[in-house]
Amino acid sequence: MAMDPFILEWLNILVRWGHLVAGIAWIGTSFYFVALDLSLRDGQAWEVHGGGFYHVKKHMQAPAELPPNLIWFKWEAYLAWITGFLLLIIQYYVQADLYLTDPSVMVLTTWQAIGISVASLLGGWIIYDQLCKSPLGKHTGWLALSVYALIVLAAYGFSHVFSGRGAFIHVGAFIGTMMAANVFAVIIPNQSKITASLLKGEKPDPKYGMIGKQRSLHNTYLTLPVLFMMTSNHYAIITGHPQAWAIVGLVVLGGGVARHFLLRTEVHEDMAQIAWAIPVVALCLVGAVMLTEPAVSNVPAGLKVTDAEAFSIVQTRCVACHAANPSDASVKQAPKGIMFASIEDMKRYAKQIETQAVRNKAMPMGNKTGMLLEERQKLGAWIAAQ
Image (cartoon, rainbow, N blue to C red; front, side):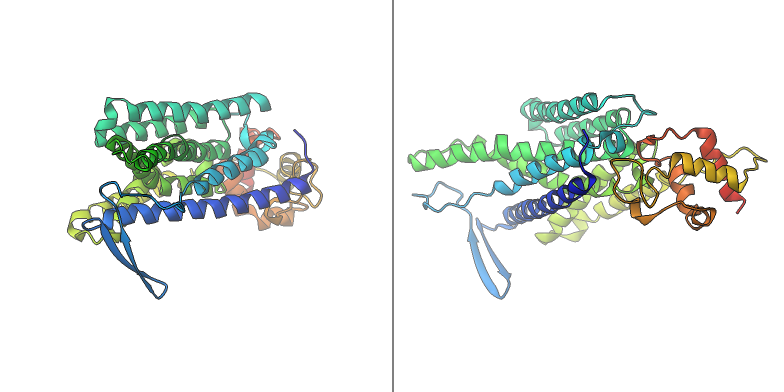
């Protein structure tokens, strides 16, 4: 799936920009309305912002009529998912051998990897939706635990199929798809049914509002974890970890609890009732940090490596990307401007080489050039001797 790297880079920038804008708009409205709903007193809320005072009222019973200019909040979610999926195509499908697959994890053709990706996103939504519709849906705690287990299980599966970066971005896409589908397939259709009933002068079935509120709450509690997944795949210290799925578990738990704390703080709930969330979030973060501490290089004792031998390994395995003129067709410029044209360059970036290639084994990306464990050990030994 070759494409001009220059064009691909601009597509990446523009779609990523659009994804950020749509995501900010969606998250902003989601945060606002959930906080608003929790802060209502007798169906009303007084708010101040930007020099003005706002009196917001929620109709607990059906209003006599609805205005023709009723505002719907849906395109923020739709555009966030559409731009996100386009970004998945541009970054991971078109450049699958660089970002999505890793032969040391599982040997896959580009189309096999894409097929697994699409099927997992669709399958994840179906399983989640059925969990919500099952008897578990009536028990908040058990449903939350089931959805949590589904996400961690998906993370475990992705980490055994895709590259580190590919796995992490798919956890984000997995959660993001559930969230967007909640809006598209549940929240908006249910709201449409309620609206249609009101326009006919009928009393709407309250179950539609209850279901929509449930899915909306799910979305807001998943927001912080999905943001972490989307931004952290640039950091090999996380994506390159052999137990990356466990990091996902800690982030989803910590992020959900953090969102709960923020929500309850926004509506001025007694701090004594929500203070428990602070140590839980702290423990999750500390656990993730401890889990991602780079492993000690497993370099055989007494291994001696010359400058020439270390340079040869880097020239063979790394300069396809890290060169003034990369030979890899999918790379336009050396990543982060790092180039290995001499031993001096290697010494300058020795710590980065040790972290990314020796300890985390995140480089080369997707191990596209087939760096061997023996070669990583030799680089480790050479760096240790500097």
